Image (cartoon, rainbow, N blue to C red; front, side, top):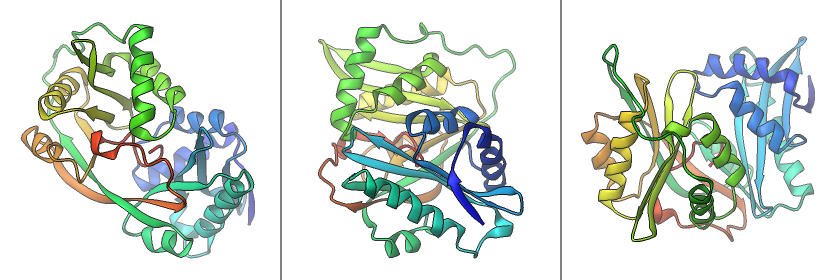
Amino acid sequence: MRLRTMLKTDIAAGIRLKEIAGWNQTAEDWTRFLETSPEGCFVVEADGAVRGTAATITYEDRFAWVGMVLVDPEYRSKGIGTRLLEKAIAYLDERKIRSIKLDATPQGKPLYEKLGFVSEYEIERWTLQRKIAEGRSTASRPAGLPAELLESICKTDALCFGADRSALLRSLNRNAPEMTIGIWSAGRLDGYAFARKGSFADHLGPWIARDFATAAQMLETFLGDSPRETLIVDRMKGNPFTGELLQAGGFTYSRLLTRMYRGTNDFPGRPETICAIMGPEFG
């Protein structure tokens, strides 16, 4: 087996592994990692092909994220996932990143605990399967936001998330401007949301709201703007109103994720304001 840095030419191999796993990421998502962290993404090769992947992304050197940990089912139980995680951690430790975060499935959580990760809070994935009427129109709103309003959202998001991730938010807005939502009242930003076009579903997040009414308005807007039959939301389990809103909107609970961190947690952000995360691969 050979462990090496991931290249853009490996994206097709990453897509193969994520399709086997039934994940929703696209080549654009892989590109986001490789352009943001070209030396922090890794693969393991065996028998002439890529059999495992892991990717990292660093936010302002405050903390880093580990995602896209995938192993070919035929090559599991050979230590590939552990080797990739250890490499990702070593890379971030060399960069002196004091906090490493990830969102763990129940199956992966014991491994992460062995590597020094501890739990912060829980996240629930909710999914909607719906029928779209033929000829249904979507995105009646103007697509995208003026630059100054997008900048306002990015500044607020840095406080909520714990670090600046404006490059990712701008990327989401470029690829799906019709699903970027911002709500202001009396000059105050009450809430905002972005969405990603995945391989089989649109994924709402980050979704941030001050109150129930704002959150409800944004979810209704997203449901109207998205043309997809499958929608995904990774909601903060501790949020007081998103469970009710998603259930009323026809979503059903799919699985549990655990937000974990290794090292210090000096920049936790403001999780109480978060309705849903961007996704387990990005935080």
